[in-house]
Figure 1 (cartoon, rainbow, N blue to C red):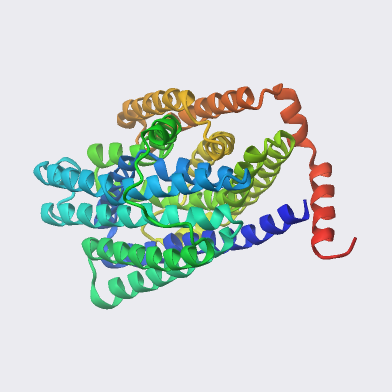
Figure 2: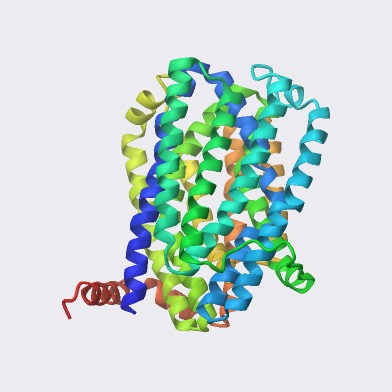
Length: 461
């Protein structure tokens, strides 16, 4: 138990620094982009990044499922299974994925994306080049994820977080300097991001190989059985990510870009970026807890798994309440400085964003728990359908309600997805919902366990 507390504490610190770096990225970069590019070009860039964000679905979520499988295998003492997952995943990432991405980028070059989504300020040629950079970045990040899985499996996830934090801060500094000092355009920022992803991959690979000599690529390793075994949870993970990231997050940007243009996308993105503070705090808690959930599943320790989920729920709700209060009080001042007086703060609009985020928070917790044990399967397809319906509802309301229309659709979709995912988690745990709720509402019990574990780690018992 003391080892768990120590790993979680170190992981929370490392993940906290990483999420701080991620939060600094929009906080510091967005004002520079708006100031030097203008609101419309900034909105076009957000629309383009929304389009580019669909590329990662081409790896079918195998990184996440292979990572979880590797962690559970190491926790169970099954080195052969862990090595098989690592080698098969690397072979797919180095062989099949780049070929698919080349074909996709060539196909996209034929489509008039700049005209469809009002990307005139960026240009058709630059749009294709951004996709090419994004494809290279995806290859680097896929391999990086597999190398980081080796660190996670050995309880060294803080090392992976610290490397990512350092690289992200370097990328942020370089991007601000390039835009403010050299007038860099969106295509240049895409190239910079791909370059830093390559550096990140190289550093993590060196560290992983020192820690685990068995983590080596073997081109001769072909295991159809492993691929068939991983495909179902991988497709489930991809479908869930498509529902939440591709549809619920990026969908409104594409709808607004097609119907109202870059300025509307920019306003939506500024409010949405402010709400990402909630997500960063949630992921700070969930990332190390998710690794421990995989460990608990590998040991078949259902009690520990439920306690970890309850711990995440408690901390996430406290963080959500704190950030919501801060945004409602300080929002007008922050927006005025942050957007250089170009985007006004409206409390009514922020309330809709908070409702959407609050409705989706329980679903994100349940989803991460299911993903950590590779149990995100059939329910992912249903969540994808719910997400698509919510975007359709939002698009139908845009003409009458403007920006508020897509938010109303988002609230309905997030609430439906949360209900679906918690029902799925309850079925997987094979526990009555009442028992899970009792654990989640036991704040005193969680605090007592946390205090005892901290005392053990510090040698005070």
